[in-house]
Image (cartoon, rainbow, N blue to C red; front, side):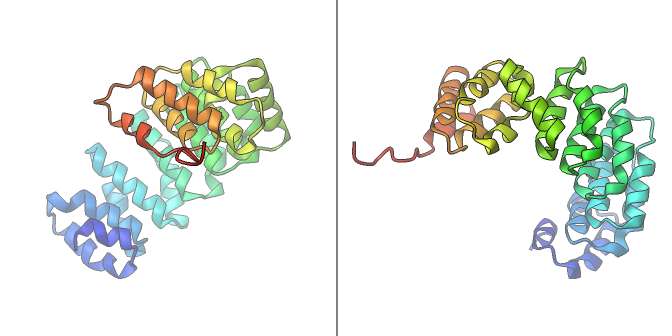
Length: 266
């Protein structure tokens, strides 16, 4: 059994031997061991993970930060909040991202402040995290972020508002789809699909076509439509895939997905 598979099992009994392996310095298994300590929520590893979160190698510190968030608890949260103050914007964005999965409401105020960060990718991550935390407190700030000069921030804010919901958020998202604000519609795609309002499919498909087809985000949107259970969205996604993807593109395999009733009586 590999170190990684021990993490998948999530058995805390694996923590002690994995921690010993990590401290032995066998570099080839280092990242797997760090991840496993988080997946098993092995609390005695927290101090070692704090040290690794300060490692100069980005892959190491990012993996350690994620494991700290998974283990959770007061010390973990306080450490992550302190790390939000680092000067390196890439690391700041990583800390914001893992806080989304720490599910600790004590991070909300700091994340709201990071919606004003000078770096757009930090603002995007902050919006994402606030959506995952379903923070109604963040709604006024997220509404303002819909007009951020970087479209990706507006998309992330729309997605977050769709997760949080509430009267103000839903009123603005209803206005976005009525007015054809396509990048916001693409951002809140999951919200609109969950709502399932008849007649919104055309705008959702138009939003897909407004995206850069070379961007992974457009692929994610098309795949979401493809498995939405809505025949119009599914067909729109299939047409988009035929138009923009080549047979050598791995995403082309989505065309092989079975369709409801395609082999039934005509």
